Image 1 (cartoon, rainbow, N blue to C red):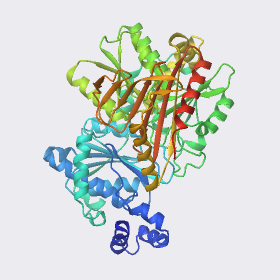
Image 2: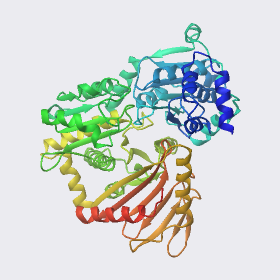
Image 3: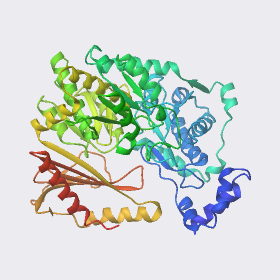
Image 4: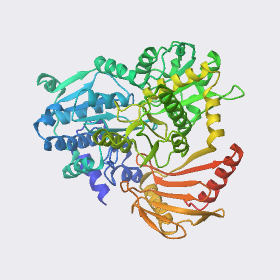
Length: 573
C-alpha cells in the first residue's frame, strides 16, 4: 500500500528527536489513522491549504508548510529579479504553531534569495492583505485556519494585488510542489543568516498606523453620534483586539466594552465550543457583557479577523444574532442611502456577492438603479472583479460580501475584512440610533419593503478518506438525477458550474455561465426559492444552501422548513 510506503519513508528520514517522528511511532498501531495521515498529499486549493496538524503528507506540519512555501518561491523566481526583490509579506494568527510556521515560510522562501517581511506579532488577515499592497510585495502568506477547531492550521497565499491567488498562479505553485520528491529534505535558511543578509525584515506598527488611516475612506458620517453607541466586542481569542481598538478610537467610539476573557490569544479557544462568529455559542460571554452594559450592539470576529458576527436587540430587548446575509443587507442599505444623500453615489456603482448569498441585496441595489453581480464562492473572485473594475473603469466597486460573514467596504484590502465591517456597521448603528431606530428595526423595514428573505446553510461533515468519497457520491447523485420538482414546485433552472451551463426547464434551453468552473450545482424554483450544493473547499463538509422569499416572516420560514426537509431526505450518508 502506498500510504505504508510513505509512512516508512517519514519514519526513516525524520530526525530521531523530531516530535513528529515520536508521534508516528506512538500511533503506528492505528492503521486507520496512519492511512489518513499518508494516503494522499494535503490538498492545495486556489487560495492555499488547511488541515489537521500532525505528521504525514495529509497533515499540516513544518514539512508540508515548507513544501507549499517552496512552490511559492519557485513561482516568484520565474517572475524575475524584480519580483524576488519585492518579496513576500508573512503574517500569522494566534493558533498553535502559527508563528513557527510563519518563520518556516520565511526560511524556505528566503533560502531562494527572495526578500521576506514578517510581522513582529500576530495580525488579522486583512492586515496581511493590506501590507502586500502597502509594501508593494509580490506575494503574501497568512498562517491561519480561520474559525476551524484548535487542532487545525493552514496557510493562505496572496498575489501582488493583495487578493488570494487566482487559479492560474495556484496551478503553477502546485506543479512545483508536485516536483518535490520529498518534503522532508527541502533546504531552508537559518533566521539569523537571513537577518544578516538583510533578506528578512520584521514589520509592525507602521503597517498598523497606515491601515487605520486608510479606514478614513469608509466614514460616511462624522463621529458626533458614535460616542453615544454602546458596544461590546470580542475577538474570540484571536488577532483582532488591538486593531479594532485603534479603529474604534479613530471613529470616535468611546463606549466600548471588550470581553476580557476572550480578547487575548488562546490557541485552545477554551471559552467557546467553536471560535466561529456564525454560531450562537460563540456569543455566550459577549451577550452576558451586553446585558450588563445595556449594549446597543455586540460584535465578534473570528481568530484571523476576516469574519464578523453581529448581535442586536429585538423588539423584546433580547439579543439576537444577525445572519451574514442580514448584516450585508443592512450595510448595503446604509451605504447607498448615505452616498445618495451626499451626492457621492456613482451611476456605475456595483455591489458584489457570491452565488449563495441573499437576493435581498439585488432588490435593494435595484431601487438605486445599480447592479448586483454574482461570483463563485470565495472572496478571491470578488477581489478579481475589483481589480478588473480598476483597469476597465466600467464599474465602481461599492461593497462585496458573502453569506459566511465576510464583508469588504473599500478595496484597500482585497479580502474579507472584519475590522472595516465592525466600524462600519457600528457607524450605521449609531446613525440609526440617533433616529430612534435599532439595526433590528432597520432590518424589519427592509423586509417590509422588499419581502421576507430567509437563507440557511446546512452542512454535513464527512471526514477522512471515506468522507471524501461519500461527498463525491452525493454530488454525483445530484448530477445524474437532478430534481425537477421539489414539493410540487417546479425547478425552472439548473445551473451546473462544472460544465458552466445553465439549463432552463422545461424548455431545455441552455446558456453559458460566465464564471470559472466549480464543483457546484444550483437549482432555481418558480416561487423565487433556490438551492445550491457544493463541497467545502476548506473543510471536510458538503454544504446545502437554501434561500426563500415570502410576504411574511411566517410564510418564508414555512417555505424554508419544507424545502430543507424535502431536499435533505433524499441525501444518504
